[in-house]
Each structure stands twice: as C-alpha cells, then as structure tokens.
Length: 174
Image (tube, rainbow, N blue to C red; front, top):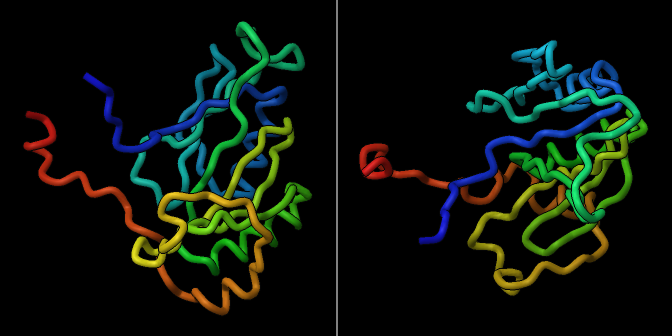
C-alpha cells in the first residue's frame, strides 16, 4: 500500500553556526524559536501564521558539516508558500535587503523568488495561482521569466491556490 502524506510538515537543516542561522530565519522569515535542544545544538522554529508545532529545525554542526551520506545527491531547496502575490513582492525586497536574494522565475501555475541562508541552503518563496486559473499549466511546470510587477498588477489581493482539505478527523483516523 502506498504512503499518502497530506503535506510536508517540517524541514531540518544542518548549519555551520546555529545562532547565525537562527538570526537569519527569525529576521527574514519572522519565525519564532519555540524550542532549543542544547545537547544537540539545535533550535526549532515556527512560522508566524503556522498552526504547526515547528516548521524548521536547525542543527548546528560547525564547519565539518552534517553526517555524511553515500553520494553527493541531496536537498536542492525548500519551498515556502505565501498567501498573495503582494506578499511575494514584499518578500523579494526583504531578501534583497538581507543580501539573500538569488533569483526568480515563473513556473506557470506558481510564481517564485529564490534565496539562500548564510550556509548557502537554498529556498524558494512562492505564490500559487488559484486552481481554476492553472489552464495549460495543469500538467506542466515551465521555467520562464517572472514579470513580478505585471503579476502583482494582475493578481493583487488574490489568495493563494487551494489548501489541502483533510475532511472529518474521525474518517481520517479510521
């Protein structure tokens, strides 16, 4: 039987300097530190509008890096969804101000800007068109130029695409 998660719950990153990374995520993303685990040199952070226990875990491992895995293939980036295109435009400026902006693109149904934290961990901040406007992008994900000003003009104030609906909690448990 296949596994069927409802969403990504949280991400965990190895970082070289825990306090520097905590500062970055609390200042740029307005995350709140909700727990620390000194024995593991770790901090757990929550996004301001999240109903989650924690959205990001940071483990300070110094410059030696985290536990070694076979091969060099691994995480490319994390994607954080914003509620409106207006928030995406404001986030672009915040990343520019923080020296963390690395690029932007349109993927048709989603509009994205990219950045990197102090350790070079890449992330995407994205806004998704409402589902009824996906059209030709229903089954494609191009990498095109993002005209952010034009997208803000077109989609100003429009909330993001559908969020998952879990239905009746009793039905989910049975």
